Image (tube, rainbow, N blue to C red; front, side, top):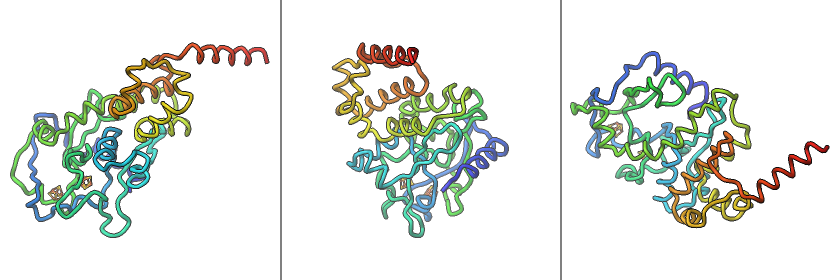
Amino acid sequence: MLDQASFSRWKEAILAEYPRLGLDDTFRFGCGPGVKCFNACCADVNVFLTPYDVLRIKRKLGLDSRTFLERHTRTITLDARGIPLVQIRMNEDDPKACPFVGPEGCTVYEDRPWSCRMYPIGSASPAAGADGPDAFYFVVERFPACAGFDDEREWTVRAWKADQGIDEYEIKGEAFKAICLHKFFRARSGLTPDKTRMMHLACYDLDTFRRFVFESSFLRRFDVEPQTLERFRADDEALLLFGFRWLRFTLFGEKTLVMTDDAVEEGVQKMGKMFTK
Ligand code: SF4
Ligand code: SF4
């Protein structure tokens, strides 16, 4: 598994050494059930999951988010920003296979994560994240057993992304990316442990976040239109977008949610008590 030091070294090497590709640059690659190395890449590998990846896979498996996260993932915070990142937890025994690989290939193929779709292409930017003005694509380091690079088929990056259904994942990932690249992280050192947990809850543990919205004092503090609220009971994607709004309010102090009159009054009273002490 990747730790913070090796992640930083890996990123530095990409920025310094890897040839940079644009959307219309080409590379040669081919993969499919007929290749001799079929499934070899689905073991002992770092697969990070975006919030949308988690939503898709837990739904595919029919698991609630907490069970999925506990059973199949580990969470790390890789840098001083305190942003929680979720990885698939590979099986313990050799060859440390991905829990979702079977003899016929990926058992969650229609819902496989963004990074599995992208391989062998990666994306990076000299600024934090991968969508700054200098963002670029690159061909990742060849996995030793991977015969895909011996295939003569030629792709542009754009065609590869279309073939792998990546555009939908990128559109659904925009709001999460905007949080990770928020100017808050340039101005301050990062999230407190409590706020890291809040971010993990709203981004990845969606079913628990749903209970938090409906079963805690949340709705006494935030004014949410009843019709919108009803959608959150069954619509994971709507709830995820709402979670991002709550995070922007809670982490960055933006006016993305409206407080109820009761919550405002409570805040005024608390302030009053502070000043009369
Ligand atoms: S999620 Fe699927 S494609 Fe990705 S590593 Fe696991 S088995 Fe392979
Ligand atoms: S190792 Fe390479 S060619 Fe083989 S299955 Fe994985 S991605 Fe495809």
